[in-house]
Every structure is written in structure tokens, then in C-alpha cells.
Length: 419
Image (cartoon, rainbow, N blue to C red; front, side):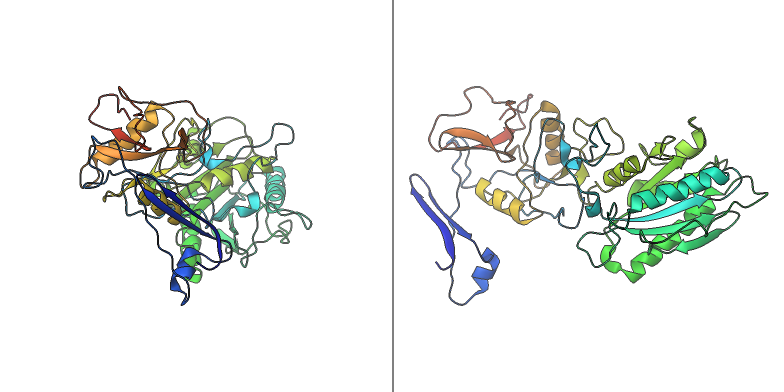
């Protein structure tokens, strides 16, 4: 085998051949004229389960979308895609450090959103608040020397920013083409005599901009859309026309800009977890909201909140899909790895165990057993997500000490969903 960096062959009850290439991918090797890769994969379960005749299904879990490289594709086997899990299910890591309030463990320049800012220019906002809003926008865009949001459209990851000045009518200042070099100071002013804006009209203008943005860039069809209100106009109208957007395609952030008193109308306007009345000067918290909005599952996946109590992060525990075709454990692992860099799902508490079982109960064809990302290597059981969490849910006389019992599965016929 050419270009091979490691080749290992183990002879026991099974034959396992692994090929790793330093310079080219296995797909490229396969397509070449002078390289051939032959892979034998098998996983022999406890003799009580006929895995050779009827492979055990699993559940597919994947990373929420935080950028194009973190996709959530379907897997052909009933597995569960997932990546790295720690105590707080940090699939959506958007923490700020306690000392300076800066991004901790994530990069704001990799946020991948289409954002339309609605800037209230009525008398409800006032001159001082309007200037503060302009300063806030400039702050989270970045400076000449430092990027907060990356708006360079030729980058691997970037966010498009649009801006609407809203008075008695919507004025488009930037149509998803704003950059950190744009100055707002001379572009907005308070509309005298206007006591407040119509938030529904503003929403319609923002939605039209987002739709036009997909016409010009159809490749961003899966990009999360965000409408960000900087306003002090408490809506008194029916907000139901906005519900479809909030439940299906995007997020509405509301920055109640003047008074730090929760107002029911503006809170209803916002998506769950995205109403704030303390962001007037806090650009890092605004960036954090963008990070949270950037964490979501594709339409074919089911979001799992895990142990997160933050309603703004519905996919904190990952994105799950129960596939419909059973495959051996080794094949489930390779399928997950190819599709979205996923892993066979790991279960570190009974809540997640039950969540996966509910998904599997709806999958077809039905199966009472499904794989989990827990396997034995060199006599030691390891989670595929590399977790050291001590939680297990073994059934009676499990795990088996038989040399061929190297893969764990859930028995959904047991009331406790034992492994």
C-alpha cells in the first residue's frame, strides 16, 4: 500500500486492517490507479445477540452548526452522531471569561450568520440611546486592527450584516454588506414627532432583505438568520406573524435599549432567551448571543438541550438522528466519522439514555437494541467521545468478560434501558 503511514493487522477471533494516509484521503487513494485499500471490519457481540445475522441499530448524533465545517449529515446506519462531551454538554461553547468578558474557547470570527439590525430612530429611542446603539454596532463589528465579526465574504467563515434605520418607514442603510469600516454617525437621526416604530413593518423589511440575500448567495441557504432589534418601542400589535420565523428559520434578538425594566411586548417579540435590557454598552455579551444563535441543528435532526438551562441554546447537548438501517459497530463508527465528523453517541446520564430510546422507538425498521459509543480496547472500556465520565448503566452480569464482547449496546426492552 503506497503512502501508508500505519498498517496494523491483529489476528484473533477477528481480522482488523486499518489504513491511514498522511498525504491523501482514503477516497483519493481508492480513485487512484496504483493504490488499493482493502478493509475488513467486524464486531462480534455477546453470543446471546446474533449480530452477524441482524446488525444492531444505533442513533445518529451530530454537532450543532457553528460554521460550515460542522455539518450534520445523515448516516446510513442507526448510530448516533456526536463529538466531544464534558460535564455541561458544551456542544455550543459560548462562554465568556470571568475577568475580561472575552470569548473563552471559541472564536467570534468563525460565527456564520446573516444578521439584519433594526435601529429604532423614533423619539422612544432618543438621541443619546441612538448614538450608544451606533457605538455598540461598531464595537461588535471590530476595529481596524481587530475583528470581532468577520464580514469578509471571501473568508472560509464570515457573517453578513445588514442595517435598517426604522422610523415611520424602513430605510435600508446596508443590505447585508456592512463592514467594520462603515461609519453610522452621519447616517441616522431621530425622527421628530414619531413616538415609536411599528415592529412588524420593521420585521417585514428585515425578512425581505434576508430573502434577497439568499437570491444573491444561494450557497447560504442553511445559514442561520438573525433579526436584531435595537429599540425602545414597546409593541402593542399582534406579533403572531413573526412566530413562523422564530420556530423555523431564525432568531429574533431584542435589545431593550433605554429602560432596564422588562416589558412584556418586547419580550414576546424576542426568541426565547434572546430578550435583553442590559446590552446598551456590552458588545461582548452581544457577540455571545450571536454565538448562541449560531448553535443549531439542521431540520432533519432533533436538538437535545442536555443539562443546559439556557433557552437560547436548544442544542447544547447535540443534534440527534435515528437512522433506519442496522450496521455493525465498526461500520457505524466509520459512517459517523465520514458524515459531519460525528461519533456514535455516548450516554453519560439516564436522561440522555431515555432521549435516545425515544428517538429509536420512532425509527423504522424497529429494533430493541442500538449501539452506543462505548467499546473495549486492550481490556479497557472507553467512550468514543474520549470522556472520562464514570457513568454506566450495565445490566446484570454485564459487561461480559468474553474476549469477543467489545461493544456496548442499549437493550430498550429493559425498564432501566440497561447496556
